[in-house]
Amino acid sequence: MLVQIQVNTDHNVHGGEGLATFVTTDLETSLSRFDGWLTRVEVHLSEDGGGKPEDKKCVIEARPGGKQPVAVTHHATTVDDAYAGAAHKLGKVLDSRYTKAHDHKGAESIRHMPAPDDLEQVGTIEDAPRD
Image 1 (spheres, rainbow, N blue to C red):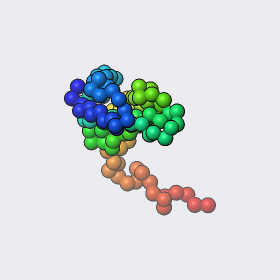
Image 2 (cartoon, one colour; image 1 turned 90 degrees about the vertical axis):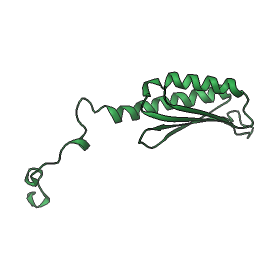
Image 3 (tube, one colour; image 1 turned 30 degrees about the vertical axis):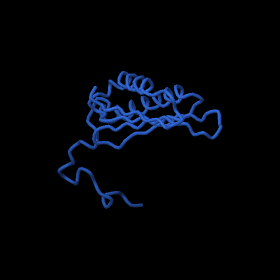
Image 4 (tube, rainbow, N blue to C red; image 1 turned 90 degrees about the horizontal axis):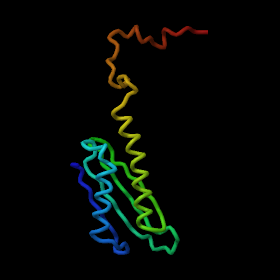
């Protein structure tokens, strides 16, 4: 996979290199269908520290080539659950975006269709019947 995956944690999240290796390997596997379309994925794992039960947070940002970045966030009680939730959300969002970018229901997108040469084919407001 040619996608660059970067894992960042704040000082409250423990796991070190093992956590980064797990996240990188999991993302390489789950995002392999987007190989060649994604250029970079950044994972940010943090703890809000507000004392709330769901104070672990995972933000994953994916950068499709030539498109706007996509970011998802998931809060949970554990770092593992926060990552799993964010990874699941990212997969759904990327599936939708990738399908829209590459599948046009078996036909050309209207954006790629040639414009009519003769404006009379299109019609104008003046041609519309008046009451």
